[in-house]
Image (cartoon, rainbow, N blue to C red; front, side, top):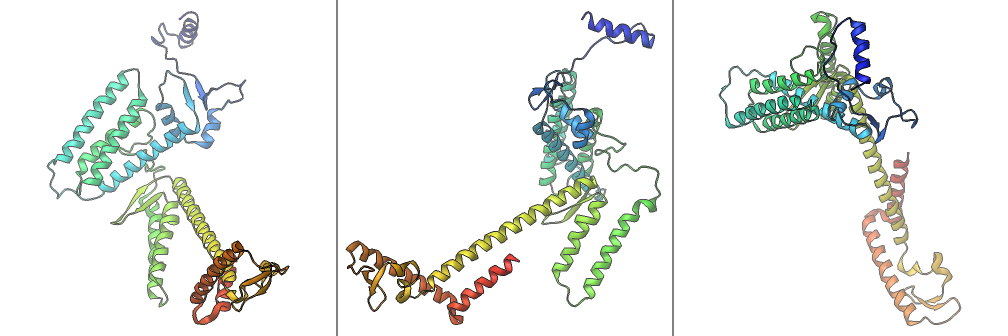
Length: 391
């Protein structure tokens, strides 16, 4: 379109000294920040450098891939969170596949069962859909969704099949990795995964395994010491297991996932694992604090009820605010006249009867709860528990 494209081609062909530079121009949609077009005048301008301070290059690439390239693209918390969720979804899938591939499968039957055929059909179908989507105006957002659907089918297969076919799930994982590499979100030469496990610098085998062997030896020493100690409990062993999972192995980029049947490990960014461990620890502390506050509230309520219920019925109307209302009482402690010497009305007598019954029930209840130690000791015990929780 004149004059913009003609000008661009003239400059580029002159600089590169060629007669024909390009045949097609692709115009990307405008970038919107939280629904508004990015503009310096609106003061919602953000640079790539600034965006990379909060999000990884892969997350940003996934965010843009999940939107049509020729339509307005939105940069917001929601779109970035969606990209992060997809990244985590693929990463967990790659880790699960690698965990299965570590098993020796050569001696097992290799024939296809119905579940295997279903997964293979899903793979073939997705391959066709991905190819068609890329031919149809580079619909990368459809490609990502097709890959997610394929991963979902494979995860379902892994959860339902007792002995999954290694070569089949490997074929699925290789294809997913290949397409993600085509889209620019996979680095390194690994045939499966995002490439975090690729070695760098040509380190020796000893240098590579040293931190992992050190972790194992340290853990072994902790278990040996605990086993020799007469004071050790099963909790001590579990704490040692949690420490090596949440600290030692996490710092080495190894994620250990526990289940009812067994534990598996996956490789991941150490920073990501440490962040998840810290979030889990904070949530546990918040839950503990919430539980403690609830217990403190219950004890405070029990204390107030116990103090109020500890007053015998015969004294109930003679103490506190009640003492200012009544003038004379019968042998059971119920008021007969007001402070001014007036006889009680029927409504007053009815209210006193109800209040007397409630207080007597409360007194008998606290008396039963106190048992042989007595009500005073019972109240002291609650106060002690409250003071201990407040420390």
